[in-house]
Length: 90
Ligand SMILES: [Zn+2]
Image (cartoon, rainbow, N blue to C red):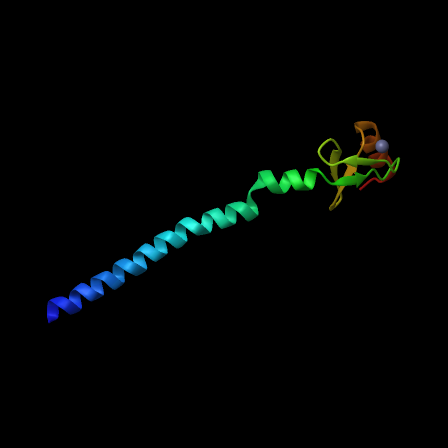
């Protein structure tokens, strides 16, 4: 009788252990999907962003991105970034 209980306990423990292992496997994948820099960035980089200097829309992937102050600005070219910087000294 004791053995049976022990076996059941062991199986339960094993079951929970396996579940935790599977969860451990699943979590990084889920997180990876959410955090995964590649697809998110791809999506983000397909966005059209407005150049605050010449008001041209450029795809984020080719935009010149500058962090000025606390904000991030996207420019069509380095020249626009430089111009914006000189017009908006931090
Ligand atoms: Zn521009």
